[in-house]
Image (cartoon, rainbow, N blue to C red; front, side):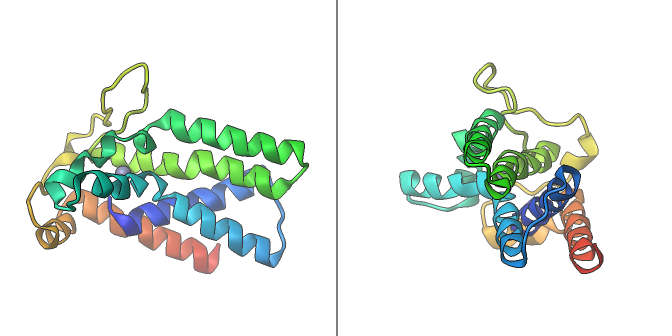
Length: 178
Ligand SMILES: [Zn+2]
């Protein structure tokens, strides 16, 4: 999945977390929490920026290695989320508590989406392995080519690209009617 799908998954995670946990926020707080939760859906890809700083190039082949950074591990977001959640607990702030849950779960929605095709380091530091779901159909036709324009074009012809469109459409539907 690329940016739109990850943001859409972040939005859906935010919607689910707020509804399941039963948080009630004012208008501005609601806008802030949805914006942050949606952006956190692509939080793990912050390492594309780190990869660029280190390697000074953004070609797909080099950028592909960005998933090796700590921001693509499950434990990083879990611990980060716990710290934020407990700060919310100490200061008795529902907003900060909700933020903690989203710092944990929105990036996990990203890792979940990545796990269909590329894999994520779910069990790091116990294992350095990239775990993917055993769905071979999801990995079919995934482009591994050297130009971004080609990557994007081929992406939307693959099953992963179709999933991306569906998740984005679902997020829009929830946004409008949810
Ligand atoms: Zn990713």
